[in-house]
Length: 274
Image (cartoon, rainbow, N blue to C red; front, side, top):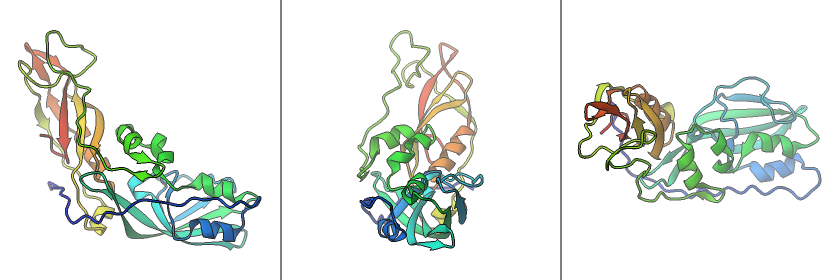
């Protein structure tokens, strides 16, 4: 099934998260409750699952599948001791993006309980598990997210995206540099799609009745393979990862210059390319 992504009816929410630490030498459970309850935070490891267990240093006690970071936020509802463990409860929050990159956060109904072994330094354990802003997650994001994230995800929040295009490709003017892609123009014959793939819709997007446009920049190499994928306009809620996975399945007959295969750049929208 071909998925058509469009955005309408955006509710724009400012993303401001308070993350002040208590001044006391040893943080109490009440301090942590004041710091966390009612706030939105991100799981540093982008862990999936409704029940997560960590040791006293904040290390996961088992392997958890990683989610897209746009599905790894929690709105904290309670912080308390449960026997010898610190228990943090909350609801998963999915993040989507409007046409200008302004974020929208939607509680998706997934309850999460985080149990942390008792520790003399509760702050250390909590800080190892949660972060209030996306900047701490950038190094863990896939490579195709990082250029966008480094520009638009700031400690103070997510800034609106400027209208711009990627300029790494070069137009044809004489002999091309084989290390760089050529922008399709003049004598360059464009690649043809030999095999296409459509993106899957995600559960958070379906739950939120959300859709969006994903725009992707990529190279098509001399073998007709898509490489160097980079997000230009994300949609969030896991849709970007599905779009990237879809485009990675594409196969092309390569672009040519004087009947020789050459490397070119393209722009993808959603799953299909244009």
